Image 1: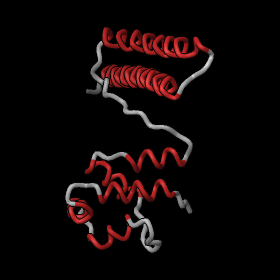
Image 2: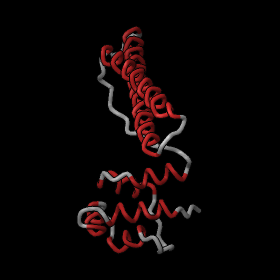
Image 3: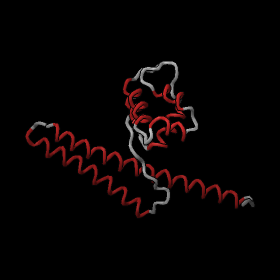
Image 4: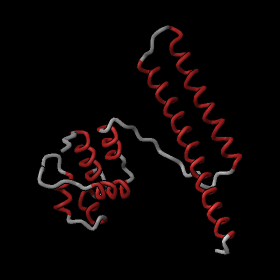
Length: 167
């Protein structure tokens, strides 16, 4: 059983920081407020939030601290993905060049920071921001490629149906 203090704190804070607190969140989740209080408590061991309740809390609140705490516990990271399902070929080229520019920005930031052969905390923070932007650009490109592949799969299925006299 996981006893992550960060995860317990994220669950507690997500519920308690919600406008109207735990009672308001419980009402929207169609849950008993007392039960939800116990489930989000950092000290009450008798009740635990299940994964679907954690998802509902995050969807209702827009607060992703639970997700981030779970990812950190698992040694993973989280990045917001865009919806590029209706992205054109020109948009795809834009994503590819954005990716290249983001990678160039990372290299430039590292080069500039390391000119004096040391990295300050502020410089490390700037590099981190550039790397995170590059990761987002990579994920956006992958999302677009997945959308293109899905569209092609659907087109192939339609062609196959037409070939056998289907829809």
